[in-house]
Each structure stands twice: as structure tokens, then as C-alpha cells.
Image 1 (cartoon, rainbow, N blue to C red):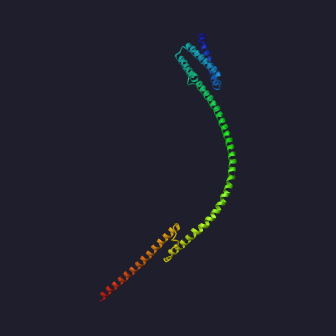
Image 2: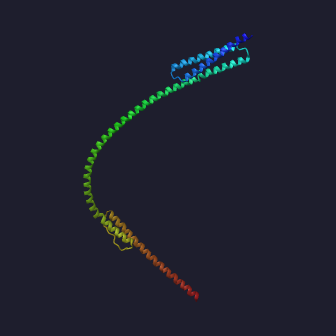
Image 3: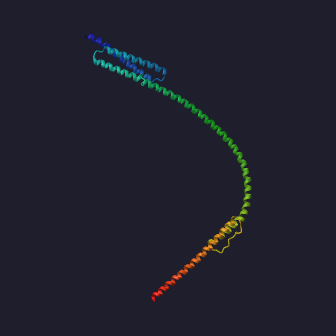
Length: 259
């Protein structure tokens, strides 16, 4: 009986040992896959993983075939389910291997974009350098042209200044005789009118230019001032007569009251 028991148990132990060995190999395969970036090596590692999963499936089936108890078969079925989940988690479309491949593809694309970006940046810098050199050349040419223009302009300005000073002196003499003197006389007359001297004579009324217009306006102001003064005098006289009449009327009323 013991011999039969050993005969039935030894293959199970041997199968479990093989299962553990394949599981360890699978773990090592998964680690090597994640640490690998070469596409050709990835395919080899994926083949190893699939081989390991196939071996685990075969071992699980053999162990299940030797199990006699219901509890043992349930445990083997649980192991098979775990193995299937591990298979999907590693080699499935959404598994670790697929995610690693996508990550490597993204990194490769990023490296390509970085290389293109560096090339574009280098081209841009070269263009900027060319533009800077062109601008410097234009600046040098502009400075040379500006120096020549300034030299010619200084000569022209000197001539214009001399002519302008001559014309300005002549104009100031004429302006002083024709404008400043009459304006001063009009200003003096305006000041005297403002002080109340209504008998002042308004000068420059015989002129037909702007000075004459100013003199006419000052004459109108003088005449208005005279009329205002006359009206004020008449108003004061009327107020004095009214006050005298009110006083006399009040005196008559007082005398009649006493009588």
C-alpha cells in the first residue's frame, strides 16, 4: 500500500517541482524582457515566455490528471487559472510585454523628434547668424551713408543759418518798427482806459491791418466805457433824487402827524 502511495505521489511531487522551475524561469524571462530594448531580443524573450507558459499548462494538465480528490482538482484548476491570468498579464494585448513595446516605440519616436528638433534648432541658429551678419553689413553701410549725408547736411545747415540770421535781423528791424511800437502804444492806451482815463486818445486807428483792427476794437471799448460811466452817473443822480424825495415825503408825514 505504501508502495502504491509513493508510486502515485512521486509524479505529483515531480510535477510540482517542474511547475516551480518553470515559474522561476518565467520570472527571470519577464525581468530580462523589461530590461531589454532591442526588438530582436524582445522576440526571443517573448518566445521563451510563451514556451514557459506552454510547459506550465502541460504540467498543470498532467497534475490534474493524476489528482483523485475533488479538493486537489480544485487547487489544480486554481493554479491553471492563475497561470492563464499571468499569461494574459505578460503576453496579452494589454499585458506587460505589449506595454513595454509601446514604451520603447514611444521612446524611439521621442528620440527621433529630439533629433529633428535639434536639426531644426541648428538650422534656425544658422539662419539667425546669417541674418545678424546681414544686419551688421547693412548697419555699416548705413553708417557710412549717414556720415556722408551728415557732412553735406552740416554744410547746408551752415549756409541756411547764416541766411536765416541775416533775414531774421532784417525782419526784426521791420517788425519792431511796424508791429512792436504800435502794439506798445495800444497797450499803454488800454492800461489808461482800464485805470479810468476815458479821455485817452486811441492810437493807430488810421491803419488798415490787424493793428488798425485792434485800435478800432479799443475805440469801441472806450466808447462803451464812456456810456457805462454816463449811465452810472445818471443812475446815481436818480438814486439821489429818489432819496431826497423819500426824505421830504417822510418829513411831510411827520409834520402832519405832529399837527
